[in-house]
Image (cartoon, rainbow, N blue to C red; front, side, top):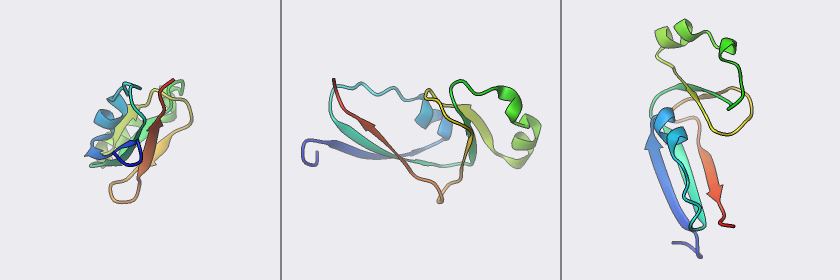
Length: 88
């Protein structure tokens, strides 16, 4: 805990990180870093914007996040993001 915030760092596949469901019980800040390249689609984004076979051949995972937005390429060691949860 830092100043009433639960702060963690998680390093895993994009699928594992985007599959997490925050409990919302405590104020938290979680830093995420992927362990393998991934192309992440927004929740409502169409699948046909991705050349799935090309991603597979290049060793890039294709995953979907719960929130909206556009496609994002995550590369280990180059991308870091922060999820902030504040209880109601």
